[in-house]
Structures are given as C-alpha cells and as structure tokens.
Image (cartoon, rainbow, N blue to C red):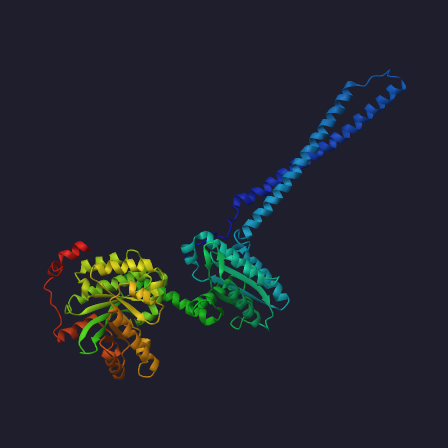
Length: 565
C-alpha cells in the first residue's frame, strides 16, 4: 500500500546503549543479591549463637529459681538478629518480585520487537530469521519452502473513503481469515501497510497444493467485510517464490531476503496482469522489472529534457471529406529507444506520478503549434484519469490557454469513461468550470466503460467518441454495426455529435457514411505526424495563419478571456 499507510508493524529496536546497560544492571543486581545472602547467613549464625546462650541462661534461671538474670547484651543482639533476618527476608522478596517483573518486561519488549501490534502477526524484522530457520528445517527433511507475498488491491481507497479505523479493521480481519486457512507450521507476517507474507513448507513434488492454498485465501479475502460504515470488498495480488527452483544453481537454496525479493517481483506481475490473482516467480519477470526500472528513470529524465513531443492525427468530416481538426497524440523521442508509443510510457508515467508534468508540457506545445493553424481547425487532447484527480486541473488548462493565446472554443478535451467512476463530483465540477470558459468536452472510448445514461444526461458533454474496437469490426461483425447504430441514435437523442476513431480502410469509411453524419479519424487518412509535417500539409492547403510577432499574437488575446481566466 502506497500512501494512506495504516499502523506500522515494526517496533523500534532497542538502542545499543540500552543493550550495553542491561548486563551492567544485571551484574549490579547479582552483587546486591550476594551481599544480601551473606548478611542473611551471618545473621542466622549470630542468631543461632546468641539464641543458644539465651536459651541456656533461661534454663539456668528456671533451675536456680531465677537467681541468674539474662545478659542484656545477649538479649539485644538476639533482637537485632531477628530484625535483621526479617529485613533481609523482605529485601529478598522485593528482589525476587523485581526480577520477575524485569523478566516479564523483557519478554514483552521482545514480543513488541517481533510482533505486529495490530494483527498479532510477525513483522518484517522477525519474518526473515524465522524464514531462514524454516528453510533449514525443510532442507533437512528434503521439503521445499514457499514464500507467499500478499498485497491488498486498491487499499488506499479504503483509508481515503472510510478512514484509517476501517482500514485497521479490515487488516485485522484479513489476518484472521488467512490464519483460519493456514497449516500449523506456516508463518504469517505483516510486512508493512497492507502487505502480508506467508511462509510454508511443502512437498516439492506437489507444488499445485500451494496454488490451491493461495486460491482459497484469495477467495476468502474476496468475501465482503461487513463494517459499521458498510460492506467493503477487497481483492489481493499474490506472488510466490520457492526456496529452490529451476533457475537456481543445483543444490542452492535461497535465503529469506532472496525469497522476499523474488516473491515481491511475482506479486508485481500479478498486479500488472489485472490483480486478484497469483503468480510464481520466473526469471524473465526480474529482467522485465529491471527494464521497467530503466524506463522509469528514462521517462523522468525525458520529461526534463523535452523528449516528449506532440504528434497530430487528422479528424475529418466523413460526409464532405473536409479536414476539421487534429487530435494530439503523445510520442516519446527517446535517444535510446527511438519513437515510443504512448501505450508503453503513459501507464508508467501515471504510476510514477509524472503524467501531469508530461501532459502539461505537451499541451503547451500543442497550443503553440495550433495557433498557426486555420482558426476553423480544432485541437483534441486526451486527458489522463490521474490528471482529473488534481483539483487544480481546470485552472491549469485555463492558465495555459491565456498564456498561449489559444482560443478556448477550439479546444476539445477528451475524457474517458473510466474517469467518471473515481470521483463523479470532482469531474462534474471540472467539466462545468472548463465549459463555462468555452472549452468543449468529449466522452472518449464510449462503450468500453460503465457510464450510464444518467451520467450522460447530467454531465455536460459536447460529443461522444466511439471506441475503435467497435469501428474496426464494422465490416466483419454484424453486432458491431448494431452497437454503432445504437450509439449514433443515443447521440441524436442527447444532441451530441459523434466521432468515430479507428477508420483503417475504405470499407469501414463507406459503412460509417451510411450511418449518418459524424467526424472520423484513423490511419486511412494518414499516420499521425509531427508539428513540422502538419505545418507543411496545412501550408500547402493555404490553411496556415502567419503571425508577425509574438507580441501581435499576445495582443490578439481577447480581454474578456483574460478576465475570465
């Protein structure tokens, strides 16, 4: 779990000074005990001696009928010995109690250092030595050990929406559900946040039993958690690593740290493949993860060095064939990897948190490029769902419009259906704010998400964009044509014009023309081009607006839009 972490499981280790002071305190206590025992022995010897004299004097007094008196010195010594013995006995009792309490406190400290206080599981500090011990035992019995890494999917949303108390309750119930399915000799640890680990020995000839065990855990945790705030459903991604596999040197067994590393890689693969599933570690995963790390570093440096540039895809009126605008597409001109598709770098940029900076740089450049185009041409820009989580997103767009002098009426922002389910209230507020300034908003990839008719009616969209997956099958799949007709009818009913993407050939174009008036785009009209190629194309068509100076361009900004922004 990243962000919104719940109670940290690892207790702080005792300091080195405390560890050094503990033997010194024990030595002083032992010296005090020895002194007390010596005093007690001396007092008892004196008591026996003085008591014997007192008894003999007492007997003589009885025989002589009280003729001889008791020696006051002997009596005083006897009483002193009695008091000393009582004092020493009480001191011994206090010391015994102190030692018992100290031992209890030390046991408690060791427990806090090794156990997660929230779930009662082992913690990250203690699971490593416990795993190494289990690996050693399994080695002697010729069994294998599986390290099972568990990460709860989208757990941060639970903390954000329902609070950390609800998150803590779910973590405790998850641990309880896992324990109910674990064999007796297995280990359960909470590594941190929403991350758990199970370490279990198994018959190396029957690895499928680990798969069955993990499947039962996934199914158990997937059952709703009934809390005071309502029912909450959680899934998990699981990675499994064996202490010896086909990729290791013969006879070599991985230690705890290696198992944790490999299980973590396998768990990441489960996340990447759609979550709510499990994978065993395989060597190619590590190579892929290493390559991803290199990509992350290259993307960060590429954003700073201006390696990401806008390309433009033509948008055409299907009925007249006239060019009506362009959609901006991101491309990465990597010195190492060449021209990289957004399908590769956009998901990574979203995960590492640089998509906002990357996109804003592209939009600024696109505004600058489009300022030279015929004012009748529009510019469409696809917005990442991550950007719509930024409450200042609409203000950033408006600020860039003012700075560039690009008319808001020519800008069409495309929002995917998946954005509508994360925070519909925030999305509605942003869309309304942008539309009030003249920006148009399109619902992109329509048909692939879960938008409802109520959302289409309540959100002020200007256009519906049909996903290419429906358009590309229009000539081969009869159902695809029916879906497109239904979307066109829906657009007519809501007074929303249609754009079809993915027009690859004449047959698709012909079929779409028969269905009604709409805009379209696709490789049939040419591959996406960089700004220079687009400018040359428009220059040849006489659709470039020459601006004398940047000052003239800035002066063309309507004062009304300046004040609104």
